[in-house]
Image (cartoon, rainbow, N blue to C red; front, side, top):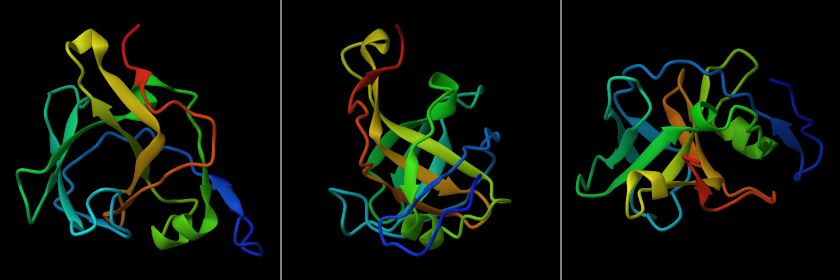
Length: 148
């Protein structure tokens, strides 16, 4: 992970997904509310399969709110978004931090129609249990096919 310059408010850092296996993370605290869910600050990260490919972010205060997510590096190994330094600082990310980048999944009509949002990943600092959904300033798809 490279350190970003902090001089300019628009400075960005390349945050490397460590590719770490997702272990038990009791509760993830959002450092900023997720778009569309301003009242939700805490989410459980639930593994939905043995392989560690499909997860759910379930709101602690409203368990009926659940987002399906996948570790982006499992499907897009070259995915390396540029993250604003203020987000990196808010998440407490350092060069030694374990960071996992999740993409929110739209399951579609069938498994083969599933897509993932690469424009607004959810970054999780595994060390601090802090997270943020980041809307990127890059030309990335909102609905990238997961299969095919």
